[in-house]
Image (cartoon, rainbow, N blue to C red; front, side):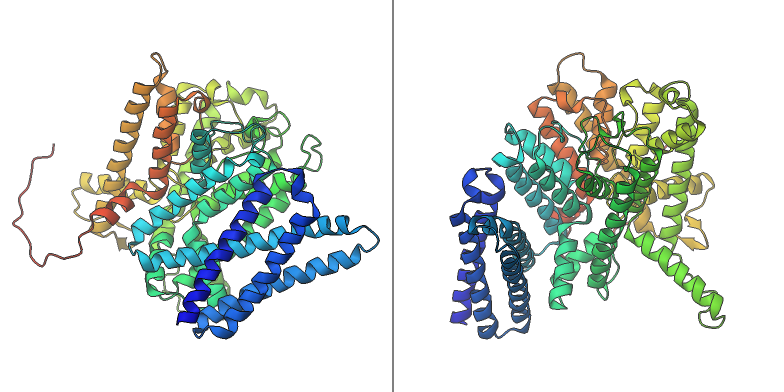
Length: 580
């Protein structure tokens, strides 16, 4: 045990050294980064990491720890072998050129190694402090703070950035909002944009999901506490298949993003204004699927070279809808298709009356379709003689109106200038932003199921019914209570934010701009009436808090802080109060 304890201390020491190398490598754009001693230092560090993990593999007794050491050994061995092959393939060049050729390989391998170690740290946090809601909130908080410091590194921006603006950008990326106080295209370098992209990805599907993915993939098992944390984040009932669900979520997300990036790339074949099409395609595919709304173009998708590319817009819309539906709905739909095919070829294989599509899937799909359809119809007629005039074809007008209906569902991309939209259109967009996406998705808002449940409850009360019944099922009282709690909390938080921003902004600030901004921040949408860059520092911190609360859910935080451990095994007398 003493030997294993000593190895753990050495392990942490190596982690700190690897972190320093990564920060120095990417954070400081010095010419010395490309000298021979620096690359030789990377080689020596990789070699020592290989020796240390080899020693750990033979000394550790716990099977799971041995497996982690084995995975690290494989990664570093592949890293060194690739470096050797690249060096041998460039023997005609000088040793300095060969060292520069293997430098990116060493850097990429060390980043992967550090990420794996970071996941181990998160798993350790599960054991030190156990409260699913607090761990969930803490993961986003730590990720936002870490992202802010990374964005302040010299190589992340061409001219530097303040801590307030860095924290705002990092929080907006982690909370997949898209509001920006600085220009993502010009105020961040390729390194800074890559940091934002990683924050979007981790924030979209959650660092807890990634942690469980690595735990299941590399170790084949996870702790009971980790299962409870992941279960809450994935909104998965039970612990039996929670890690397999995490594995499926990560694989599904990456697969959709790769396919989306390929489609985006081929939709830009005739666009010569975008220099790095591969990075542009990957960035916008991930940003769209995660409903983030960040773009590497200064004017966003409203850019003259993009806003008339209707094929590109439909691809982005598809990614937004997939991300906004959530993995529960997608997996349930695939299960339905699988069941349908099996029933078609094997009539007696599956019982016909077994419900495959869940009530949650039906509610989400119907609500999403209704909101998208009526949103498209409303914006088409409301903006026909306004922002749609620049689109000369009917297909262009239909595409633009459809995009305007999809993007307020927490995506945040804009193909029109929202400052030129009519007031009725802006109010309807605020309504769509407030509802947001679906539960367990990459989007925010009060969620489609919450809105549907509240609407059905109003109809049930109007009909004099005490229960909400639909599709041959009835909702539980707990679901109804939770839905109305979420509605009330959202309006309270947004109302308080509007009041606070109006207090700290100059006199005469348009109320509609503030209202639009606060709804967009809470629902993690990212649309703005060009108001975000003009915010004062105090208002920026208010919007940061609103984005954070909107992403994690105020109700989740309150449950984590106020949940009572001891249950009451008694009931108090009932008494009605007047509600008119």
